[in-house]
Image 1 (cartoon, one colour):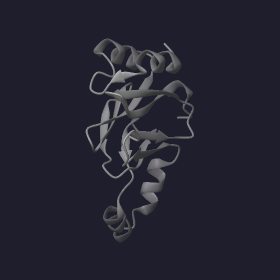
Image 2 (cartoon, rainbow, N blue to C red; image 1 turned 90 degrees about the horizontal axis):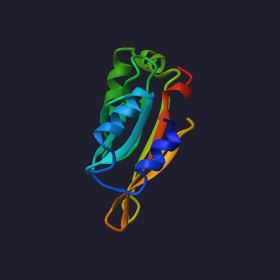
Image 3 (cartoon, rainbow, N blue to C red; image 1 turned 30 degrees about the vertical axis):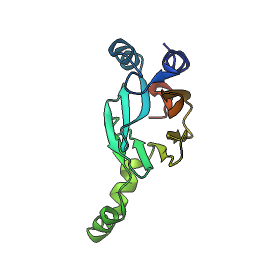
Length: 146
């Protein structure tokens, strides 16, 4: 299964019914990650990486080569702590080679969750009634540089 095939399969589905358990298992078996919005504050990854990140005000998340985990960009307070203990370089090393995904949560009707990344990906839309709830992405880990 390719990222394009999976994105086409789930395109247009309703919020909370975006992907079946079988499709999620197929995504995992094929090294695919589905990135989508849930609730009003969650960026969720399903498939080859199964994780979620709080993103109520947008921001950035990273698919890290270290354990292939999703990590949040530290907020200002967290960066201050890293600076205080001289660990800013460790943060930079940790995300070196990671794939950055910018998360956006629109504030207008029809402008739900969306994601931007320089990593090759396929897109799909999740609907909530007649409105677009989310424009999600599917990434193939086999195409990633880590």
